Amino acid sequence: MTEHSHPSEAAAGSTPEGPAGHKPGEARERDVQLSLGGKPSGLRNPTRAVRGLAAGTLVLEALVLLLALMPIWVLRPPGGSMAAVTVALVAVVVSMALTATLRFPWGWWLVSVFQVTLLLLGFLHWAFAVVGVVFGLTWAYVLYVRRTITG
Image (cartoon, rainbow, N blue to C red):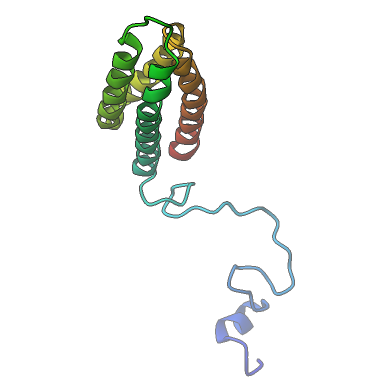
């Protein structure tokens, strides 16, 4: 028995192993997936993280709709009504209110319906269609991230 070996190693007749359970210089036979606490994303609370991403997306959408008020007003047809401006203000309020529904499974579906509704409001004013397309694609990405992270 050498001075650096452990007594149990001498009895078993094995060579010392490294910290990962492999012999020094031995290659790993399989890939190791990183996971912390059984959660593949490495986040402490993946559901809360995805809900925050979705809420941030809705708040950003509300901000964009607020910024779209002026172009909607200026680019309305001559003699046009205030309908598009009113709908934009209602959409801002709905977008902010939908952030509270994200803790429920049906809230995610409701936000998806809201995105489609914005796209359809493009018949009222083209700015709604632009916001609907941009944030519809963004919402599709948020749903992809939700499915990937939370499983």
